[in-house]
Length: 101
Length: 495
Image (cartoon, rainbow over all chains, first blue to last red; front, side):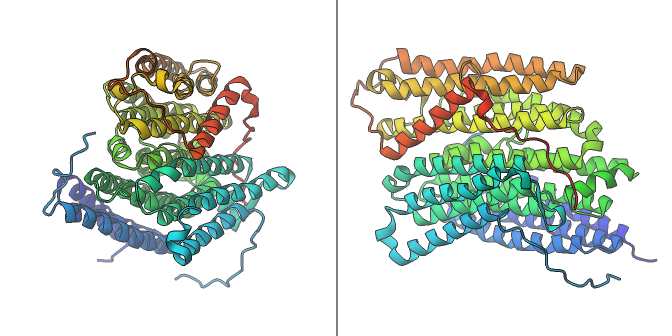
């Protein structure tokens, strides 16, 4: 059986759905953050698969930008998580609710 | 498989990118001044940043005076400087200048880190300038992240306050989630179009046959931007973030950051989805109707003025989405109406925040009940707040009415039932909104000061300047709406 682009796209859709579900049901800020990273990497797989299928480089260029931006987001996200957890160790997303939408 | 192409150095129009480069240089200079002189420089850094924004306005003006040269198309059509982008660049730079004026005393008196704050503000504004010209999925993505990532940090700036930490964390998680949704939509669009430039995507989508997947891509992209502009039901982060963040930064998020989200939404929807209006229009119609109604209904119940302004901003965002619900028939007038709304909204909302920040210097409170007796001890402030609230409610002759009037004109222009119904919903909402704006006025004008404290409010020079700029713009745009430059059509040409 030959592995075609469709397989990669399905993998990407699956990882994306997994990340989105995780973000919505998990309550630990750190795990929620990991789920977002999973979603961003699913997007990368999708970009590369399309780039390969279309024989076009701009999809792979996009991946570089997504990677760099994701790295910047990790720096900011972790520092914010640390700032919260330092004040309230063991905090979950439900505890971080002194502000009510 | 991929054939290596010979590298061709792109031709850069230095005049066209001068505003961004100037601001970048200013940001670097502020960083250096902060590092070299440290404590001694704290007093001049806000002034330096503010002047930097005005300096970046100069190339925008020279580009505007050289309008015959427009549009300046760079990087194969990925970056376009046209009248639309110049008007918006001006809007972002002036708004950022007013935000710096608002932040000057707040940051200093609160003993927060100052140098870093202004560096992050300039980084965020560079992202906004890039956004106005970006006509490519990748540059739109990079611009939106350049705007958001510094904003996540600034939202958590009062780092010893748990509320502020929470504001930053919530904003970051929702913002990154929205970016991921948007990016997934973009990757699908790229897959169908084989190009990341918006102008090339439109014709490619027309000939494509996978309708369900294109629909999915359009929905993902619109929902991702929906988070950024805090459209209901993707608005839940906004009131919490606005309340917890430092108030000047709240003004920045509610005005400049939201406007940047609209610019992205407008560019993508109008340039890339003209053939997908069957999918995008109903989606945006529902978003607009729900956003203005829910925003107004919840705003009525708020007792904290910053939260009330947050929900009122959500309701106003509904009006700004509304023209896009009929963009298929009238793309140019929809874009024009949104730009006019953004300019006037920026002036009146920044003005309202300026009054809130000034009043909080005395009352130390954000509760609406603390506004009792404002007219007795600070009549000027009460009159200005009345002006901004009248404008937000859309009462002539202040700017707000003209913005709403333009939106209604666009909605009835194509003469469709959907347009008429949305205009009717907008009209009902204007009445709802007047209710809670008037309740603040009642507090200011007729209620006694809760503590019987009638000492005057000290209005610092920078706050005076901010109040003057916003009040003048709000008044002039209402009386002489013609002063807002016409943005013309969005340039979609590929070289």
